[in-house]
Amino acid sequence: MKRFTFLTVAATAMCSVIVLAQNSRWNSAGLPPTPPGQQAGPAAPPAPKRDLTGTWDAGQAGVGARGMPAAPLTSWGDALGKTHHSGDGARMVPVTEINDPLSTLADPSGFPRNLLFELRPFQVVQTPNQVLMLYMFEKRWRVIWTDGRQLPADPDPRWYGYSVGRWEDDNTFVVTTLGTDERTWLDNAGNPHSSDLKVEERYHRVSRDLMELTVTLDDPKAYTTPWRARDRLQLKAMPADTDLMEMIPSASEAAVVKKIYAAEK
Image 1 (cartoon, helix red, strand yellow):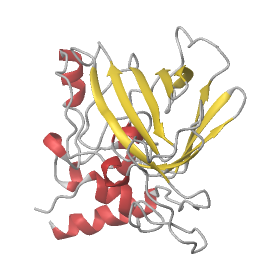
Image 2 (cartoon, rainbow, N blue to C red):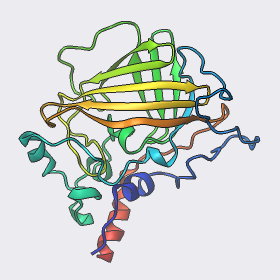
Image 3 (cartoon, one colour):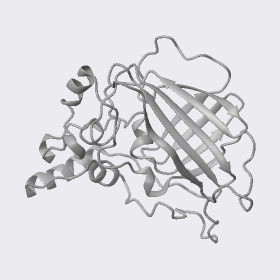
């Protein structure tokens, strides 16, 4: 019986174009390549203060592992996880039984799944009171408020949550997100979460061309302990003229691919 991974359905079959190499110049006018990001050191250009502006790429490391390691589940989390029939990882099932909301319903991947499995290149734009995250995968965007407001005490669920950010120092931006929709999965393996999930992102700009991302999840309803899902993931600056490709999920394309795989089983 043929099986396929979430990546096949969501990142290839559902997209309107084929994914190119992660570190390509995409559609950048054919100019000479910009040197890749550098490690911190005497030769690395310094990072601008309190500035994440630019287009960033994690390369292949942005596409999550098959069945992302997670903290132990609570009984509630385990029961929810058993209802998730994925195309990858420990919960993998035949293609006709997959119920991944991204690949079967074309629901948004949601947050933090867009960081934990399909972190393709993304652009950061800063305004006086917001940081905007513009993601290539799904062509989605997030607002991170930086005007000093507090997170809502009882937020309505959102696909991408409700986020506020602050500068911890001149090179570290910390984002806290609440109010995620528990219909979304954490990754392609169907790891669950509840609407109580609290996500902390730490963007540490090491140099002009290198940034590190750490993501910590705290969901006492679904997991027995907080856990770190990304640990200093390296993000490299892309050329300023990079034109990111359109990578929009398509329910019709996903349905066609599922029929093909089902016919071959």
